[in-house]
Length: 185
Image (cartoon, rainbow, N blue to C red; front, side, top):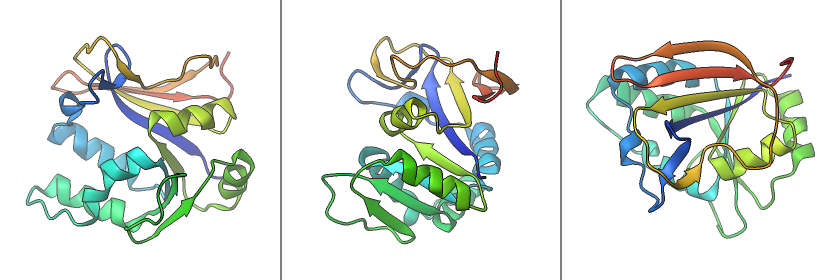
């Protein structure tokens, strides 16, 4: 069975965007981006909500001269995507299908048949997967900034034990934490 991984860049106080929806403070430097690329390389399918998918669309045509950016664009283009949205009529990126509703049973089936890990992007959609017990690992990249309010990386009302699997400190002050949701005390 493939694992479902929730990976998110957040402020130290746990927000993915500030109260105005801005996340410019979250742009990874080259060292962090290269690390993210290596983590994403194995992912076969990304599950997105509408907003997260819209944030990711530019990677489809990005032709940035920086090697780390080009590498990520190629990784992203090679993966399948599932977008959950009631408002979108169609999706504009290749290898992408549209689903109207997040169905935990359908995601379980996808996990059972997938040959590569799956990732779930965006805190709203990830909250549904966390509540349904579908997320196997959480990867958090904590940035050295406090934004005070905004969109939380982790949902209210979900309680689970986590087992720390890995951590890494980057030169720019970002800290990576990798947790398993399985087998924790």
